[in-house]
Image (cartoon, rainbow, N blue to C red; front, top):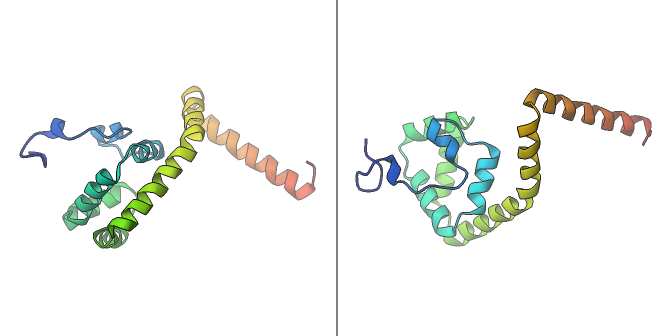
Length: 142
């Protein structure tokens, strides 16, 4: 099973920052995507879009399922990517990198907290905070 780089194995593929989760067959998390977008050039974005635009429909359906999408959504996304102009690509790459810069600090805080606190406690704390905010809003307590 050779890779796209002239029959070379998977180790020949370029490493994308934040995509380590894919090596173990796991779907990438939000933080992985943000890390990847922060470091992606327009050329890398074009190469990724070309890959998706030319992907086998069965492989695209499998990838969509892994990411929580249905095959119809993935097919529509594939069509959109195939018809995107270079100007639109540059615009969306810039937007994605702006989002990545804006989310870097909150994401770093989330990663730090989630490494210290078990996820169930973190979720319970967020639900309690939300309930407190709703209570305060409804009663004008604070």
